[in-house]
Image (cartoon, rainbow over all chains, first blue to last red; front, top):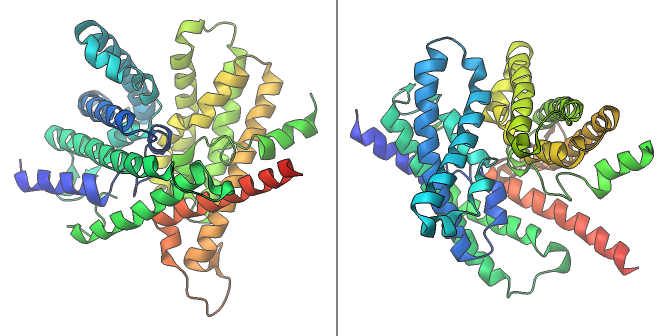
Length: 206
Length: 198
């Protein structure tokens, strides 16, 4: 276990290969729930939570069942089922043990099954770690998942802060609503391109 | 069924990407070249038509309460077929599209059509709906990648377009994807506003 590799993974996942702004994963919630700061925070926390759990289970199943028995072509089917079941489980557990948290996150949970960011991080974790050129181990894949979730949340919160102000601005009629949000997203993506200077390897994360 | 109306609906009035705004992530990520766009489009058409047909055949057998997981399994099966076929026959394209081939599973268009159309209509209608919606998606994907490929690399299917023009690299990077779809959607909205104003 190499501690510096964990730091590299986190920085890459949060800033350099930000899930939304450079990998284009999880765009639907990015534009769907970024109208208000409070809902953006709720969605972000839920995503971090589910991403962590999901990659723990998918990594374990992939390594100890799919790869061992040579049925990796079932990856897509198995992963999506695990994620769907997990979301359902988390929902039920929250409802029973923490009604307050369920109140806050409940409406975002069903949306998460079809959030490509969750399946995306599960699939990325089955690939190779660009810093060690080895397969991700369990800790690395967990760190990668949580950091990706944090990157997602960061972009979502920044976006909602900007969009709350755009509501008050005068925008050309044809660009109202989504198009102006896309332009804002593009400007943020340019800003995040600057982080590629932090990259440790030329093809980080690809 | 009026075939002309169906086609108009899929391509224009209910275009999945530019009007309904479904399936954003893969379309922004793969629209960097025409080859990618067409490859992705064919994959989506295949999965959409296939899953629509199966969902519609099984629509009376699947209990309403567990229909979403059932739909997802059907879709994932077709995606796996596409994945294996792509790896075998077009490995270069498969590497280009990368993670976005398995991610067709969570492309909202496919689940949306299964839920909104195929689970309520007959097999032929659902197949036609899948085909038309898939074509509409492919069309908008091609529009995006046409703009991005020409502005970003000055190439069209690998051939030089305007000699002496210095391409703007930003258009094939991530920000360019956002800007391109913003302006294409703005244009669509502009024409719709003008039509409504008259």
